[in-house]
Length: 145
Image 1: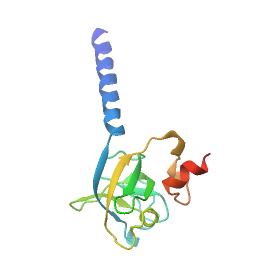
Image 2: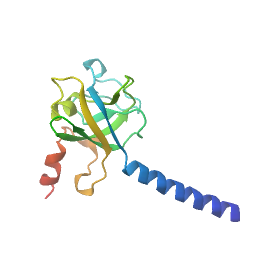
Image 3: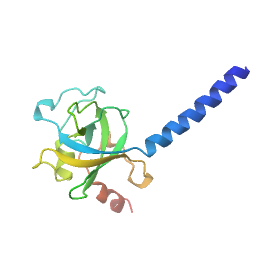
Image 4: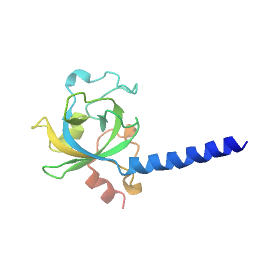
């Protein structure tokens, strides 16, 4: 019994440290967007990919994670749902749907510098999977008041 209690306590401690690390996660690098080839195909999470959805691929963040992506050139931002794995090109940190890239002003460039961070603000939280059209994060907080 004592071993079980100690085990549970250690598990609780490490899981709270892990969640704090996730909350503080921030990464800078290059973003790209999906080719039309992937439209209607299954992602690594099993969801169907659509260019007009607010989704992205990341190498290691858990599926279902909401992240804020900021274009470092123009400071525009968007919140997307991680539902796929990738990108698998050196220096790239995230692959975005075309609609998300468009919101960031990155369609013309194709590849652009971004900052990716976990998004957990209550006032901006939405289940992105159920949203038909992406909403820039700047508009979210103003539309909720």
